[in-house]
Length: 159
Image (cartoon, rainbow, N blue to C red; front, side, top):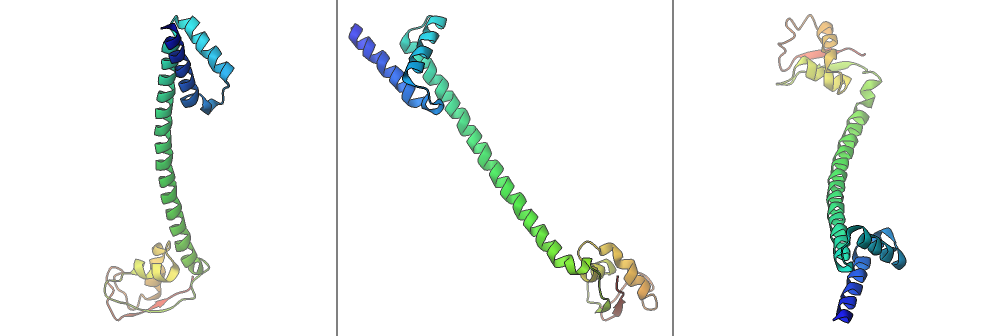
């Protein structure tokens, strides 16, 4: 019976080595010392100490899986942020010509437009607030800046 118990203990130690400890690259002597130390500290058998080590290794593996899941979720969020950054770079590139100044010109009002929208079209995406330039250049035509009508030809002053 003692020989069977020794084989069981040996198999449990080998299982601990094969499953739990290669991740930290310990050698056989270190594993045996760790089991012996655990036996002397806890007063438990080799089998019980090996089982405790395996349980601890399983818990650490489960925890590592959780971290892997979190990392994948964060990588997905990073990809979304990069897409938004790329989108903004595109917007800025399109508006670059307006950032250097608008040459001015004329604009025929289309239904649904307003002065801030026209300012955004002519002066660039972030310059909607420049609509007073258009209003002041067309005071003879525009009496109320909230009321412009389709078909009006507006002068767009340069910046």
